[in-house]
Amino acid sequence: MRKKKNPVPLILMAAGSLLFLGAIVSLVVPGIFTPQATPTPLPAAESVESVPRISLEDALAAYQAGSALFLDVRDAQSYASRHVPGALSIPIEQLPDRIAELDPQTWIITY
Figure 1 (cartoon, helix red, strand yellow):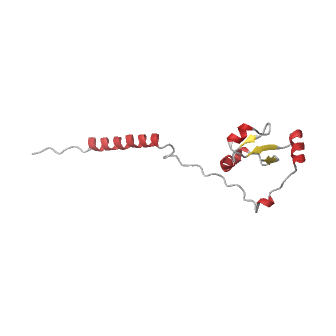
Figure 2: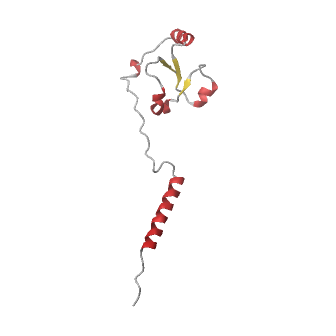
Figure 3: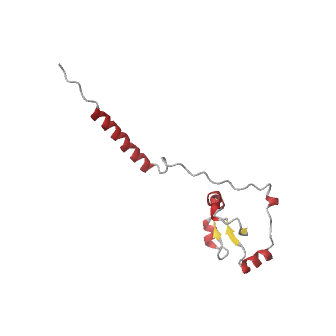
């Protein structure tokens, strides 16, 4: 009479192989097992015309008084080539993900 084989070692090897495969996939594809953060949507303006505008003179006065944060929304290369001294750089495409860095109580002048 033939002795019945124990299936436990085979099951353990299969489980170990799956764990190993999962570890390899997680190294090759970063973030595959991590939920991606949903960016906070920006409040929508009714139109571009509804965004308040200020004159260059008022912007200069705010800069000299230190009463506003200047936010440069251009790409990093443009910021690196020339920007308002002390301006914060957040490229426009990153703004939805980084909006929490801005204090809503601060006067923010974007350019």
